[in-house]
Length: 601
Image (tube, rainbow, N blue to C red):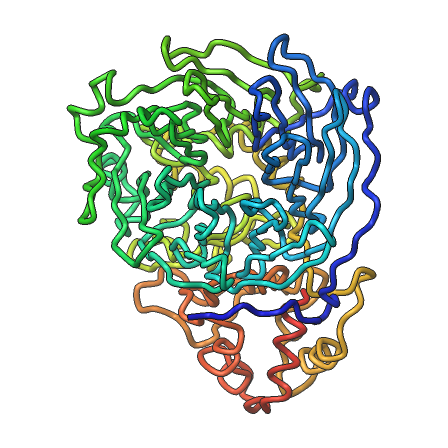
């Protein structure tokens, strides 16, 4: 059992700062033509208004449901991910992932007013309020921890260590258990909120765990996720669900137990990239947003066959064709998180690519209304590329999208087998797509020197769907060029290194480690192919392209095969200076400082 750890100082001095928020931008922001890209939303207790977190514009919208009018819009930091609302509907909390903040706003009449912001760092995402609303729990996806924030004093009380890449969380109705979706380790971490301890992990094979909802009795956390089944990427294997598949599941919160799961992909027409999940308050339905196939799916909850053994690879035909058990409602765009109203009559959907909230009628099983969140620009080339990147219909039968493997343009937590390295059976970690244009040549073996050709080949061979044309490849390249770098909270606000990291920089450049001989320049790669003694007899190409080290601290597997599980493991094992450069092993102090420096890149 991991105990509650007080917030400790490190490179960025992890103290909590309370400052005045940016003021509400009111009519100025509401009138700006911008891609708001909503990702999360919550209804007020009276059911008359919505509050929407807009990732693209870094804002929160206050919407009156009666006429769909946007009453106010307020800035809330860079790239918000999740939103929570107090029981009286007067206090809003938003996680600003790229500015590292938990932002508080007050709902006063038709206005959103600033209350404050707390600097947490480490990419905050999921947010939950304690039952008495004195505390906020915030998933810190880059710190493998949940921050506990005292909302009365505006102080961070400490951090609860959990498994890696915690992104979303949910609190049980009695407030005693916190479920945390940790995609880096393929598990749900369960936390005891009274003792602030990590009780146990419910582990399963999977990645890209979405939002969670907890059953009214507090026993189960429901969530969607994806599973990678290790088979070569061929149309036949894709159709069998043997490459990537989509699931919903539930885990126990009161004791460790095997997850109970359901494969949700019907044969011939998959349900890809499940993201949002919510239980109908009347107990009739489990709703899931499929962001890759652009739909809302309703599953009848009473006889949903969740199983602790293998759920198979496809949704049973008797469920898929029964409109009383499985309802698929086309929405378009990219539906993200979802909420039921209190009567269970409507589902509200934050649709990122359509810049709107969609209202789906459960009775008619149709899209009933669309609420625009403000003026939007004509889609740019990059915006069109964003749509292609998140479109699972680019793959065979809609099983997965580019985003399925490159989550938010980055990497994931498993090794995968594609023909990008020229052969099947040589599993490799998924490379990040950030700074792609600056880090050629491409693929692990560095055999491709033309970026557009690399993208086109990858999309055609990995997706096994309609081959992209030149305009589509250019659009995806434009989207990837605009991907923001991941923020690094291991540096001071001015970018300065800690003393340990500064010493590590000297080790990095020095003769003993000799890292800079290959990992050079602003992206820490020389763009060359090297033989570092890790080749497989099954590799088609010799050597490996030097990967960029930017953002290396947030990876969960190192080297092309992911066998090094930490930076310390990397530097003492297969990629030690002695083995790679023929120099010598580092001292414990040198290695510790070097790790500090690498984490700050």
